Length: 340
Image (cartoon, rainbow, N blue to C red):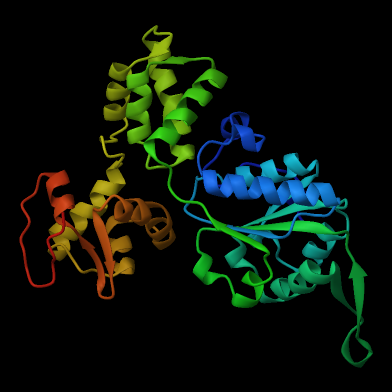
């Protein structure tokens, strides 16, 4: 078993600086008010009963705070947290080694839970319900199954693809929630909090501009804030101004809608090579030199949410808004609805 699965570590796309500005308690967590209010009640009730929190299933696009919420749960409960990912659990003994050694009421976090192998997923069923693990001893006719007790724990399963989680596993979670993209006001509060932690000033105009260009995602807004701090530092400024943000975004090829160069390549490819669509996701991914998972998990959700792209039964299609954003003239045809 890989011992790294036992250590909290940055999730994909993060670095140690992300961890440094990560909220530690619900009162510090910005946005997702309904989810936050509900979680505070569930956590308080579990803590008052001295019981583990019920198992939690969190879904949503990358970078919205799923890992952060799991860490907050552990902190609010006064419990330990063990972080791993489904691909790291290669064999049943990996799961046995983790669950048989955790302290009682540990928060056990599994990222990308939709990628669990069937054998490990089946072991989890019993562990989640009865706090026991089935383990096979011996081989052939002499093989027998023994049940290994595990301390009561809280499983936090996280995924960007909830539709790929099997129904038997999903139904064993007592708390389910989806984290959605953040609004500009919520991101603005995140920017100001992070700037204070990073010890850099930022004007209101600069903060609002960063919030607008951050894809509704805290991870992105914090990453851009650190880059703007770099631009401010080399120019000798102790405060990030709107002018610095405007200059920095241009240098990073990020436009006022938060679209990056690859986003615009996706839209341009559909317009230039496929007459605005429809085009299949795999074909589109190949044409822009991008992985299918990255296209579906990172780029498409924001483009759809902002109204630039549509998913249809026949494939991906751009909207009139995409033509306008790229400064193109739409060529209307029977398959291409003109949406504003």
